[in-house]
Structures are given as C-alpha cells and as structure tokens.
Image (cartoon, rainbow, N blue to C red):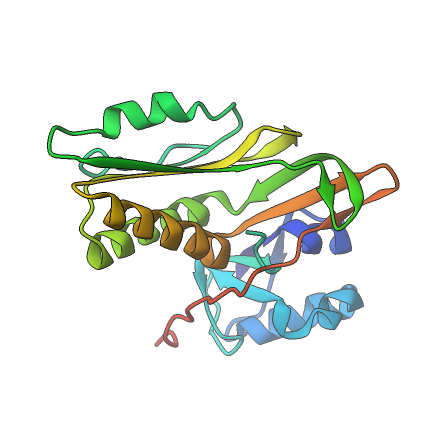
Length: 236
C-alpha cells in the first residue's frame, strides 16, 4: 500500500521532512507506521502523548487500520491558502496576505444586527522577556479550514448570533501584524462577545496551526494550549 505522510511544526524540524510517500504492507495499522518513524527519528518518540496523528484529516488512535492511498499527518500540539466555502455569509480562511479586518467585517453585517464584535490577535515583540524578531505560521491547511468551519457550527449551536468570520495568517509575520481575526455579528452584544471569546479559545485548541517564534539568538515552536482533539471511532 502507498501512504502519503505529512509533517508539521516541530515534527518537520525533527525529521527534516515536509512530506514523503512510503510503502507499507497490507493490514498494517497506524501504530506500525508510527513505530517505523520513531525508529528513524527517536526524538518523535520523546514527544509521547503530545504527538498526535491524523488519517485523512481526522485524529485517530494508533490502532487505526491503514488503507492504500491514506494521508497520514504527524501533528505536534497546536499553537494556538484557499478560502473556505461561505455558509450564509460566513467565511473560514487561511491567507498569506495582510488581514484587513474592517473590510472583512463589512459584508457580514445585516440590518437585524445590533452588535459586531471583532477579535484580532497581533504579533507582540517579546516572549517571556526574549525579544521577538518575527513569527512564522504553518498549518495542515485543508484540516485547519474544516476545523474552523466546525467552530462556526458550534457557535451557531451555543449562541444567538448571526454570522461568523474567521481568518488566520500563514507564513512570516512582522511585529504588530494581525495573525488571526474573528468576527461575530448578533442582535445583542452579549451573545457576540461570548461567541467571539469561545471561538478564539476553541481555535487554539483544535485548529492545526503552528507558530514558530524567531529571536536574535534562535527560534522555538510555541507550545500548545490545552488541545482537546476528538478521536474518530475505529475504522471497520
């Protein structure tokens, strides 16, 4: 069987690989593939439970049976492109261009809205006393957009809101630039505030985007913040 294997964030650095295609025997499980890579790159094993794996963009257990043509991704904790398909005016996007929040918010507004709440995450110039030069973001792009869409559905189910927009930058960002913008409209401000707060917390938990912070004396991958990945049921 031929399997496509992807590496993101810290796993990219530890292996020196972005992706590769490998041959595995019929009947092998994800655990067999993981063990193969842990033997090649022992530092992957040192990550222990912090390292997750996805098959075809879904987090699964290592007992998951592999099939020909599967796409396997090694996912370090998230640090929390093509645009997603709009849903009733909503949007979920990854971009390598500057985020112009006012322009994004304008088409989301509707006559029945009494509030628009916008959250912008911006690049600060320090991390725990170290001077930051710039950041780089990377993502498992198709899965990231799907997870942002999932957050939008959660918001609609939990809060009395109108429309939702989520956009995240990828690539190099300079100090002061916007890394993520979340826009929520609603008839009343409380629902819009609560939904926006919930959205950024969920984004940092479940969307596979990783941040690398560059300093004068080196660089580090940001640690994840309380990720709550959901495992898919075993494949039959």
